[in-house]
Amino acid sequence: MPVLGTDDQQVGLVDHLDGDAIKLTKNDSGDGQHHWIPLSWVSQIDEHVHIDRSAADAMSGWMDSSPSGN
Image (tube, rainbow, N blue to C red; front, side, top):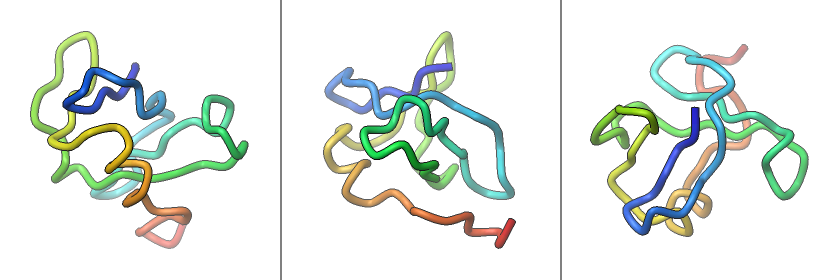
């Protein structure tokens, strides 16, 4: 499922839920690595996951390792 910023730009694709975060697939990231965003950023879910910030802001603030330590 695509994750979209407030600018309707895609941040990534959901891999799965990891505790209180969404793990994004590594295949669609520019660096080939997994990234995580907090569930608290989610503002709406329909055919996409919408977050409360732009894609650029999300990418500058995402986590590079699992917040749950997995």
